[in-house]
Image: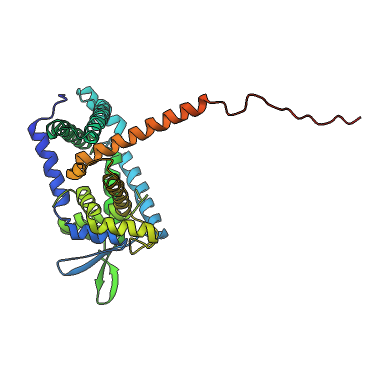
Length: 215
Length: 116
């Protein structure tokens, strides 16, 4: 596998970043920052994400154990360490990708120190711009490798569980306003899974940003 | 829509939030509607506000020119440089301290008087 990233991979990273962010505008983010209760309107329905209570946290934990046990029994899924071995037999070295990201980080820090020093000395714009470009290239390369690594490990049991639990948690903690009362937004997990992608993206964002230490 | 972190940085950097942040620090009022149980995004926002407050302070003290605020790459680089320099300075101070004698050269030893 080549260490250099091709144009296609760079484009893929860009597309994913755009997809993640397209439904989140600045006003929405500002609102989320101001308050830890998150409400928004989607297709004329008022939704909110609540902080899970003890019972809900227990339900989420039980679901996690259930899913893990079921995936462990399923021969189609592999643990991350086994998946890494399989990739290695096909000359794809995930650990070396991790090392590569780390090495790039060290290289970036060195360049940042140099650039910081130039800025402090009020060096010319040209000198600063060269280092700026080098740093930005490194960041882009790191992102692309991380994206590739994440894609390769997407099918591991560990990642499948994270994905499932985020979905399940979103289903558990989302409410909608009916009249003047907040009620559960989805009657079943299946209903949640078949809802609009835009709505799910917005809810998933709120869940990941507003809750801590849940997954 | 721009990247989430870039949006948070932009908000934290603007004059309104910077003024709010410094007033909150000085006068002790709360920045968010919730005073406890801060969310992940609020913690990130606080950290960005503190970062920009630190850069703005250095700019106003003449430590660095306001060119540093031109873009995120300059801002990050300056902070990494500043942190590294701070660590180096601390290390040098610690070395100097460990080389100097803490106890005076003459030490008096007090003994208890033997009970006969």
